[in-house]
Length: 80
Image (tube, rainbow, N blue to C red; front, side, top):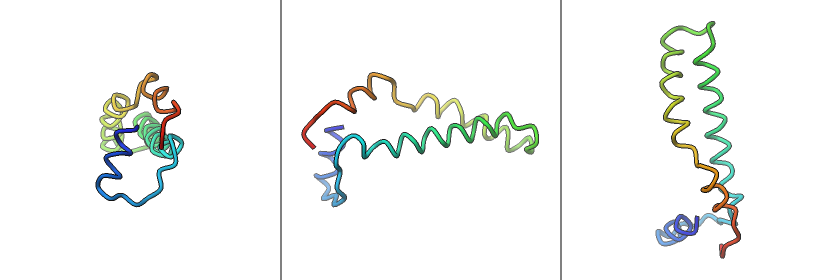
């Protein structure tokens, strides 16, 4: 997280980054999108092309989620 914040500030980023909680929205968005794609992949009322597309989205989404160690490191106190 520290590297992300430093890189952002080095490019003159102006938004206030208050702490790890500021990154929670991104994780929530990813989980919500994953939920939607998984539901669509299993929804027999949808057209086959939509279900196939959604089914193709699920594995890369699962692989891109941070692991527990990464999440634990993100919530560690640091100088923001």
